[in-house]
Image (cartoon, rainbow, N blue to C red; front, side, top):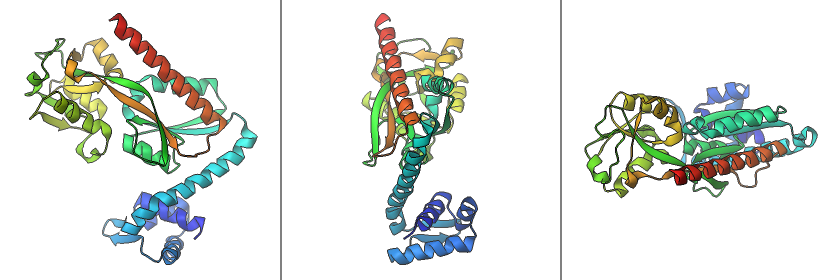
Length: 311
């Protein structure tokens, strides 16, 4: 078994086809096919099944994929460790974060880090929480910021803060600016939720139902969409109400295009978790960024506690 074979396998699994993998790896399709044939000979079982849309993993392929990804990630770690000897505090760090966190202090913190450490190149991307874990596990991202802690022994996760949640509505809503002591009175409301049903594994997709159930709110209509921006615009238009991370609607609340509904039974927070691979190599730049992220989270949590106490 060779690295080329493993690389071809992982590329096909990620991209969904031999031709796409060949383009990505700058190899001919016959060369990619031969690598898979040799890998299947070594494993003594098929790892791909051809379908009309391309290829899908067999049961053996699904079982082998996380191990193959770890091999490539470890090789990347080794290369990074050697290069880091010559770079000192310079280099590149890749960070993937949940899209809703792009509306919080983390983006400003990352911008400040980039200004203070011009020798470090930050590669940023957004994804949902499960995709964050997948990208970190495969080595495509060094660090990840997601909601809740993943159940994955290959990842190290640390809850660094809670993002407070708030129920919001349009200014014309009958409950705008009011306190709702009995959450059951919301049973007839339509909720606009993010993300859409295809992301059922996404923790944020389950948070609303879990909180409504715990508060005793049943038979609620939930309309799911696939964009945080669309979610806010739908609520502003009076299409429904929503439970959102407070920092993501701070500007709309300031401008008055959205209003709060104070529902004590639905108060709480979404735990923000920093994830990295178990035993992954962290360059000096990555270690510095981890420290900065934790410090920013601690400062934000302290400020939030002070605000609550004063209020």
